[in-house]
Length: 308
Image (cartoon, rainbow, N blue to C red; front, side, top):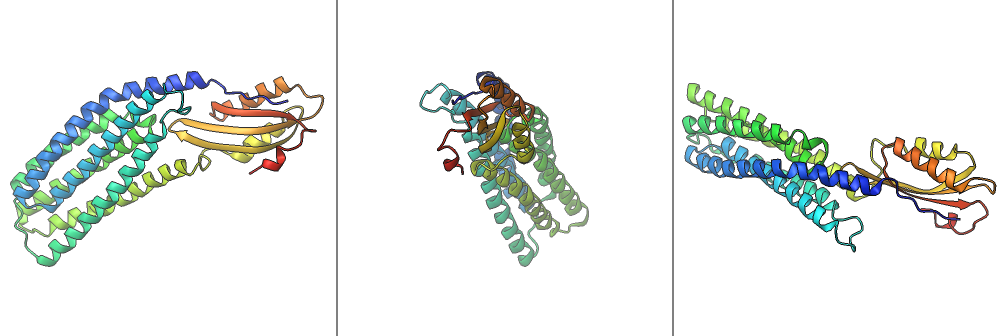
């Protein structure tokens, strides 16, 4: 006796699509603001001869890439969900976007650190503090605008969360550039520029690592950190008539979408339909809306042999 049950699957998919739609408009505006200012900041960095400003521009570029990837993954994933061959849509694109963003951040941080060492070794770099300060102040304003625009969507999407965190970190980076510009203007001490650039480079590495780790955890189908597998298995085992639970798996498909599957073995007198409903409730209480539960009699042979 086998039953497959998906609890509230369509409702949850529709909710995800509605959430994504709310994020799209904000992402487009944030993308336009970010990429426009990247060009301004990059030109100003070369004019002013500032590595700190260039590092801030490079980091803002990764912000732009993060926003573009988040936007693209949401749009493509929702369109792909209408394709019958893609039974899970293309929601995993969001996770891949987050991983690409983390890798790009690692590359940018490495470049900035290398250039900072070169600048400190070569000595005086002749940084123009005026343009550096004006552009850094404008960059801070842009980052704060993007930060507040993405704040709500960051609760719903890993890719949006990555762009949101990038904007927050880049705002702090702009503050560092402002401080460096003030120091150069008041004291003429140019080494502060590559020092601030190096600090920004080192500071963004842990964030890139955490984002990459989160994405890899999803791609490797590791159980979500907030899910207590032993507790869920124990609650399923405690259901009336249940004698065993095997082939129990929980993983994350994409942000806010945990998925589970389980074989629930019942005794000969158990109400299979009742067990199925109660098992679904157990999983819903642990915020797992997508679940495939197979209820099977304890005298059924074969399934336990496939346990992995």
